[in-house]
Amino acid sequence: MHISEGILSGQILGIGASITLAGTFIGLKDLKFEDYPKVSLLSSAFFVASLIHIPIGPTSTHLVLNGLVGIILGWKSFPSILLALFLQAILFQFGGLTSLGVNTANMAIPAVISYYLFRPFLKKNYFFSGFLSGFFSIIFSCFLVAFSLYFTEKYFINLAKTIFIAHIPVSIVEGIITGFILTFLNKTKKEIIWGEK
Amino acid sequence: MIDPRLRLIIGFFYSIFVALEKDFGFLGYYSILPLILSIFISDFSKFLKGFITVNFFIVLMWIFLPFSIPGKEVVKILKLSATYEGIRYSTLITIKANLIFITNFILIFSSHPIITIHALHHLHLPKKLVNIFFLSTRYIPVIEDEKNRLERAMKIRCFKPKNDIHTYKTIGNLFGLIVLRAYEKSKIIYKAMILRNFSGIFWTYHHFIWKKRDTFICLCAIIYFLWIIYLKIH
Image (cartoon, rainbow over all chains, first blue to last red; front, side, top):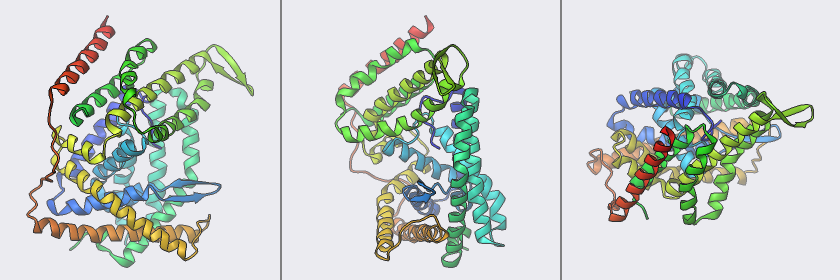
């Protein structure tokens, strides 16, 4: 789902970078001194999560967990995802520096939406809300990736469709895992989700 | 070595210039910088790994794009015809992606992430963002160790990943535990920060020193970019 360098048009790169800039600004605005370690360490944990491979059918994929990032961090998921993608770009060459803005926006917009959409229902059923947030975030991210490709060059449509269809099973597995993670966190340490009172 | 701040700026501007290029003729001028820089590739296995990763998406694109764009037919494979326009566009993207990769690999990716983030700090990125970047990058190896330890424990207990709900639940719990450990560690770090009177600045031992050579390289880079702008206008 990381779009490489040199593919997208200037307009799409500009729009993506502006959204990421604005989102990161909002995310950092209410970040207090005491939040530094929590946000940083959770970002490290989410980066490490992307190194875990899970089997899906005959292939395997890595965890994205942007739904979970969104539910726990809210707007702060913008800087968190920006960091993860920046490190993936400079360490493993997934994505790139010019497409960093677009890639971050594609992952972080669904994260923030799932914060508003699914967090209120979390207390009713942790697993189900978690499943929905994980499922929705991946599907919506894929939609945004397809959208960025399509608006660069409308002949990308076949590639965009394939990426979208290939990610449907991924989103279901991601949803199940997000549901289990939230159930686990609810049983062990609720403060991670709801903050300390 | 060139000053990391300068490397970051050159890499950034070069990437933007190349990413926005639509004209085939200019790619020759753009390949001058990566050609000069390619002498400095030291870690070939890492370079090859990155090269394969970058070109994975490109290969995916080659499967679809030459057959999607209408135009003059060149080859026909299984009733699908690849067009001249499609192949031309795909080649343009392939060259652009690889030019940016080679340049950035030598300028930015070959140095340690902490050095890159330190350079970002000197380039006046928001202090809060740099602080998060610093702390997070510092603790990734620690959390990764934790992950490896937990995975080893799972292996000892004969866990084999399959396509079933048990696997997904176990991986969910594994990751839940990683988040939990990360959170608990963050509490300890916060206390340590207070203890050391943290004021929002991470002090480092190593500082960047701007040398005469950096000024020279900076001038060369400016002339190079101005030359390309000049050629574009005319």
